[in-house]
Image (cartoon, rainbow, N blue to C red):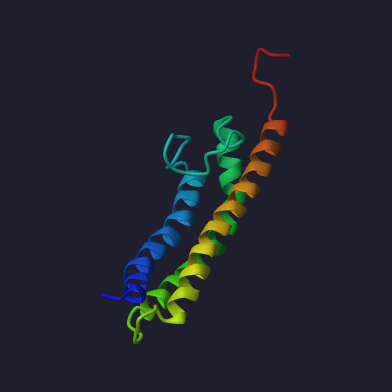
Length: 135
């Protein structure tokens, strides 16, 4: 199997998985199915500060995560299809472009989500009232 075919037929489905997981995990954190943990979610000091910060950060990142997921999924479908293009000694240019674009979108989208989530989590912590008994 040529490099271009591997890019498309392996890289495409893996890109689709990443594109699905980003909005799925973000939504799960907002809905309460995914609390602060050591493995999944937007794990930054600001979002891990409290349950309130965790939910606020993920809620703010929900829009960017959906955009990232949709664009990433579109790239994944096209990348997978590019694996069936005639490949020569070098991968087809479409496979290279779609691989770079798709994974760039997912990585850039993850950074976008992290920045948005961090800002919202910090704002939620600032606006949080003091717990009872403190004052």
